[in-house]
Length: 273
Length: 250
Ligand SMILES: Nc1ncnc2c1ncn2[C@@H]1O[C@H](COP(=O)(O)OP(=O)(O)O)[C@@H](O)[C@H]1O
Ligand SMILES: [Mg+2]
Image 1: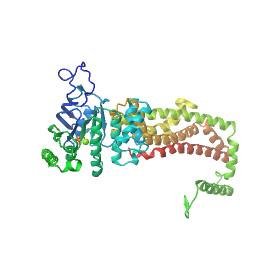
Image 2: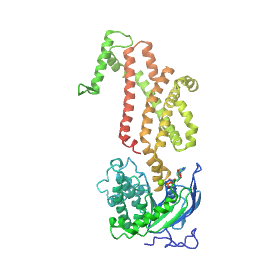
Image 3: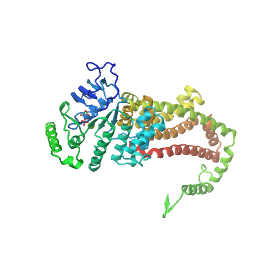
Image 4: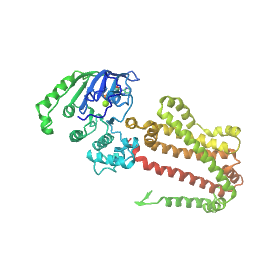
């Protein structure tokens, strides 16, 4: 894992100087009570190791999206703390990029302009940002669709645009909220493969929300399992499935199936009966 | 329009109506309706007169200033109502009341307050058009998907960028509908205002023509106004059709 530039002179919330080998994100005792009185989070604590893919899994409505949005700086926590590289998060920043469950593409803009939008907001000159965006549009497998509009694309392709937009801003941390939830099962598997391949080239820290146990076990280095709302962390596991053998091989391997079963057992306790 | 499988151009159906008009006029059934050809002749007679040019100028002036005020305030209030729930419920009731109330009734009060000139006409245009613009703007802004707003924020959008690049663009279908309806209301406003004032603009001409029973001139003037209103609303409708593809997919 490369050591991203982090000046050690700057004081941090954590004890002592900043540790470049420390977690990329620390979530400490996070609680969230919504205006209507809904208690979503009730003391959520976990670390996100640098350069890894961490999934957050839990029953629907347990506060996965809320957690991710607090990390993104889009939603304020009621109490608790999120640290990115040792600095408390108060607002969105260039070190984090979000991939939205419903894609959040601008319907009036082409694929290329959508993919370049993060850079456009940062004031990168047009030529430069379109060059970068074009590169990522190709990388996510949308070569030839640069001038298409979102409504001309399938759900899977739209999410690829969302991914290209997030990659183009070159943030260290990628926050993905059920990115494949509205994508067909066959395309979903292909997408998982593509994501893993892309991430192996890009060297990002990824926080990945999903409700699919199989998906979590398949793509993750670490899995954070959450309880029902008001939620806490039930368990953090590291399946460490050996990915050397190809996807069909992995999905049939005893280690993979065993992990799916164990997480299922862990989650079962929190499902409504 | 289709007739026995043939596409009939719109100009043709207009021709049929004009022919019918001509016949009714020639029959001298109703004194209010002169033959269409007389109206056309009156057209050439009315348009170049100093009276008409003056009336058109002052009407256009009142219309443009009134509409400009309506757009500024209508968009402003509409955005505030759409973005802020408290403002929405505080202002919403009043905007709705005014939007659906018979504003013609308050024109005499405006005259008493602002006199018989341009200020009253501007105020009428404004009062007729501003509410629908504000309401459509509010609807448009409220319909902008919250994830699009979060997307912009997450990539570091400034307030300005959020308004101009996301909210304004995403709400464009409703904004254009508001503009089109506002223009139509504003035109009604300027004519009704002038009719009630009766001493200025096209209102004065209408008054003059109908008092002196110059029906061809009266109709010619009406056609000028119809055409203007039609062209203005069609011009906006053209842009509306261009953005309609994403009105359903936000
Ligand atoms: N803006 C909000 N206002 C009120 N309640 C909310 C809001 N957003 C989420 N919630 C509630 O908080 C809980 C957690 O939501 P969410 O984080 O979306 O769950 P998940 O993503 O795990 O399905 C749910 O009960 C949801 O209804
Ligand atoms: Mg969710």
